[in-house]
Amino acid sequence: MHDSLQGLLRSLDAVILGKPAVTRLSVTCLLAGGHLLLEDLPGVGKTTLAHALAKLSGLQFQRLQFTSDMLPSDILGVSIYHRETNTFTLQRGPVFTQVLLADEINRATPRAQSALLEAMQEGQVTLEGSTHALLRPFFVIATQNPREQIGTYPLPESQLDRFLMRLSLGYPAPAAERQLLRGEERRGMIEALQPILDAARFLELQAAVGEVHVSDAMLDYLQAVLTHTRRSADYACGLSPRAGLALLRATRAWALLEGRKHCVPEDLQAVLPSVAGRRLVARDGTRTAEELGAALVAGVPIP
Image (tube, rainbow, N blue to C red; front, side, top):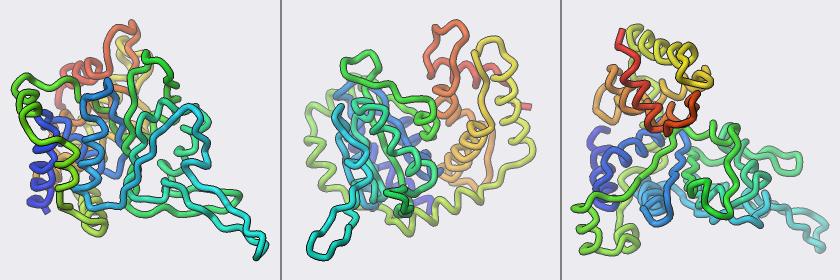
């Protein structure tokens, strides 16, 4: 199990150069059964990371380019009437897959964005009064451009909360960028990738995440983090119980990725900025999500 995960990470790092922390967190997010939001400037590798993750995971994959004129039926599907038989047949949309790349999700209107809410939360969609289960596992890997760019619609809080993690790649370090410029074109590398896992294996790994032991001392630490955000004057509002459950899932997945069957405080600290940072708002409004998450790690002592 550990060897498969390490092989996946090595292959991912060969495509996404110089970003080992981001690739580890991305794999952690999927192991925890969460959806991943990649937010950054165009051209830094968000879509490449999503493509590589899907290919190495060995899961069914669909890419959907979000645009301002997109309709919910473009995501979910539509019933088509057949005059000859006087019946309707459901033409399933791209959401009926295992990994859905929602590229530039904030280019679409809130109406189109909301079409993913039920799918991300319940693993099913409702079309014309009928409920349809999605494949398992089911992940949404969404990319979005910064809000200040032209033609974007900010994701509402209800939609943001469906994502377990929000990550940013940033610009590469000079050495990694030089290797990128001299190396093989990324699209060709992705096409040559061989799957490390498959759907059955992925489900086994997710089940193993749930079996990772969390001691009472670790729960004390997690509750101390949650309580700190609710009482501190630094934050406009604290972390919710749902955020606490998200942190717990991510902590267990990180521990499994590290090859352990129990959690330690460093596991929680590793995932805290990416899970909790975007859910916090600084009262003075001056700090970024990453800075808020890092301050939270530093500000709560281990019990």
